[in-house]
Amino acid sequence: MDARGKAIIAGGLVLTVALGIVTDIYVAAVAFVLVLTLALAFQIMDETRRLPPRVDCWLSEDAKKIFIANRGNERALRIHVTLVPLNREFDLPELDVEGRHEFLLGDMIAEAKAVVGYEDPSGRKYSRSFSLSATGPADEDLLKPVFPIFGWK
Picture 1 (tube, helix red, strand yellow):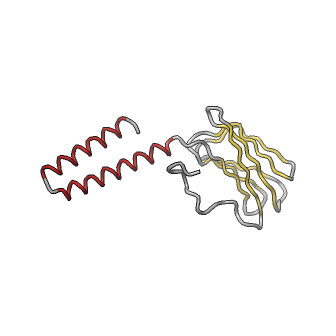
Picture 2 (spheres, helix red, strand yellow):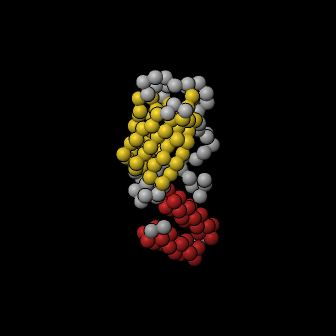
Picture 3 (cartoon, one colour):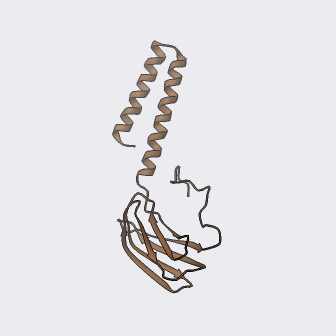
């Protein structure tokens, strides 16, 4: 948490103690719950500020394009996509935050696996694989949170 957030929380705690002394204890308890909620919100904001890039890959509805999107909070660099067993490879120099790119395949594909490798700006390497199917189920986990909070992996 940054200094401004700590100052706001400290001010809220001082206000809570002052309310406990001057007014009723229940008003102070309500203020304390609000300060705790604010502290939790600051903690979540701090954890989600520095998310690494998360490159996702999926097949278009007509099975002639592959979409690549960066859903993290940093740029993804040196993206390399390999389609297995189609023996096709694509490179993309970078993808900005919330950026999206599509690769035209020319032919329809029924099923394939996309292996995506990329780096973040600090040089850390990541690799993910995606099942691409024109008729099968999507490769998304519906219960997975939009962003990893509290160290969810």
